[in-house]
Image (tube, rainbow, N blue to C red; front, side):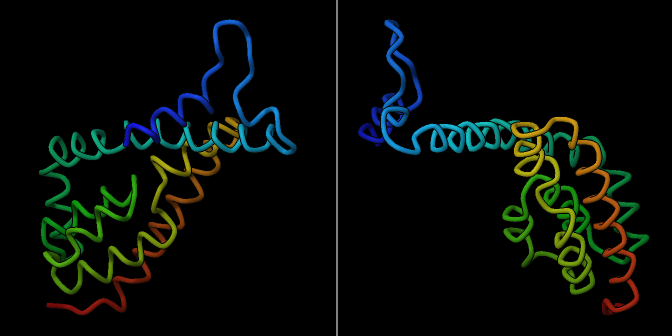
Length: 157
């Protein structure tokens, strides 16, 4: 682990005397540095997204429960809809605790809406901040449409 941190330090940081990072001295190095900057922006967005998801599921427990009940899902499945906005890995972590209808609805929602508040938000912010609104709008509208269509096909309990 320590070796990786030292390497990361050597790659990303400029020394005080103005020497450029390691990769900028090789062919294609600027592209590598640009890629590392995008990855860093995504990591920062993820670092804030998971606490946001926890906050939203705690504060919106009542409305999420009502949404889940209206859609025929259990509370875990309703929380999965919020979790998938950051990343679908936490949603799949609680997938086993969802009722069958909640599994279908979560899977349909995550196809389009997953990563909206983390990975894809970080990518858009790092590359073209003016596209954040259209990207979020498009992903969320498509996710809700997937959810609506899935309600007709999901098993009823």
